[in-house]
Length: 198
Image (cartoon, rainbow, N blue to C red; front, side, top):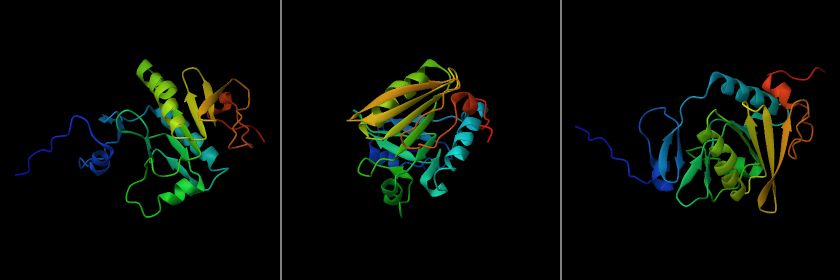
């Protein structure tokens, strides 16, 4: 008879990468602790899919990850994030060729863009605006979008000389992205899930 596996109180990155509980449960590793990622709200899932479709207008499908790429970030203890959307650089995409797991460990190149859609509630807001912002900056990810349905704002964080500089976009102001110069949608159009009329 198999004995249930006892998880260590604090996991290392190697333990996390080897962990398999035999389910389809999605996890993040946060300061060495395994954190279950529950399903998002239908509204946030629709928003993520909408942004994925918009990104496909600018990048091949092989350059975009949709809720399926882990990124190891720096911290006091092992931390691995699971962003909503990621746009690769050629180097980060190519570094995963032949890997058995879709994980950008710290020894691999960072992606070009990470997008997180904020879930309601203070802990989620702190996670996306404070902790992930610091972690992604330390990982030298060139651009980080914080998409906030509650405030109907999108914060574009651009990596400049080791830290992020933020610009907040709201209403009918066209979002400006250093990575996607042809981007033409406003936050209102994004949150209303409609594209601009040609």
